[in-house]
Amino acid sequence: MPITEQPLPLDMTGEFSQFRSRHVNKLHFAAHSHHFWPDVTRDAQIRCWDEAAELSDGKWEHVLGTIWGDVREGIADHLNLPNAETLVPAPNTHELVSRLLSCLPRDRPAEIITTDSEFHSFRRQCARLEEDGLVHATRVSVEPFNSFSERFVKAIKRKPRRDMIYLSQVFFNSGFAIANLNELVDELCDCEAMLVVDGYHGFLARPTDLSRISHHIFYLAGGYKYAMAGEGACFMHCPPGMEMRPRNTGWFAEFGELSNQQNGIPYGKDGWRFMGSTFDPSGLYRMRASLQWLATKGLNARIIHAHARSLQRRFINGLSRDAKCVMRPSSLLIPHEEEDIGNFLTFKCPQAPAWYDRLLSNGIIVDYRDDRLRVGFGLYHNTDDVERLLARLSEIKQLGQ
Image (tube, rainbow, N blue to C red; front, top):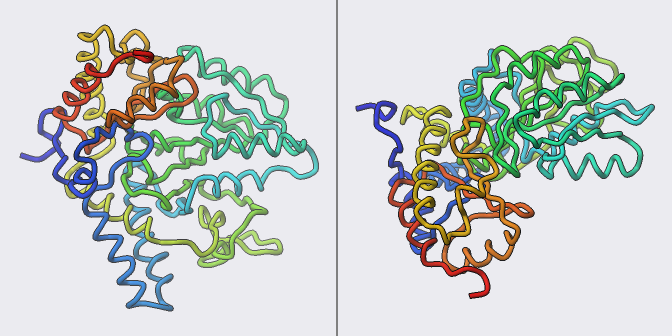
């Protein structure tokens, strides 16, 4: 029976034996932060070394040709992009964010409209530029969630000038997901601004079809989370045909087919104009292996999300039977019945740092952001893992006891 026809949740734990064998007495529920890698990525890591030895000086033609070519085709397939050439790799999303910011006007403070819940790769950099008066940022509160899209659009429309619009597909500090991404972009595509979507918590966590809006947005994501490839394997989709000239530019950006409109320093076409310089290619090897493994198993974001949601429901149902547990269904930031949610649950918890330490000392690995505990579910979990988590939680005493 094909795996796509199997009842949810799945049991893929055997495919993650290398990571799981090193966590025998631990319960790792931080898939949204440090997702386990499937076993096939270990072979890919070794292959990276072997091919570097074999190819030596010819390595980069292979890495940026065959390896990246396979990776970008896999990414484009999962995002339903019309053309994989709009994609560009980078070691991290901050590098890509910095290049986008370097495209902003330099003769005045650039106007950025964003949210109060962006990940640090953008939040910190934007705040630092704002500190020097290089940008002016308007931050729209993501909460209350049910009115966010409407309030965000209104805030943008009120601005007489907009240079960049930046928001997440799934917000890292809550799990709230922009389910109506296409409709939101439709509202904003005439704003004459750089429209950027941070998809790191959405890529391969929620079904994402960019085919209709690919001409209007930049989309950033990477392999550290649900793409299961670890660090060093990020990417950005760029609107095709744009002729932006980032001031923060790497020397790889002038390789390959060049843009028709050149003025001074040359740039590659489409996404390649945002390319950097020499990097560790092992992340691309691992992402290639992970994407090919997903294809072999018939897995996609829809199935991965359904699997995670099934485990979430089992977990919440179990918590409902334990009134003493720190994580209660009533403390969920987003009720688990809601569909506008990613693959992790966020619990309001005033003593989140202390509880993180208490859980960690009992072999439970989750994480926290300010006063919120986050519990993430991935393909490396099965129902037995959830039951073990519930049993161990029931044994943990309250703080101060």
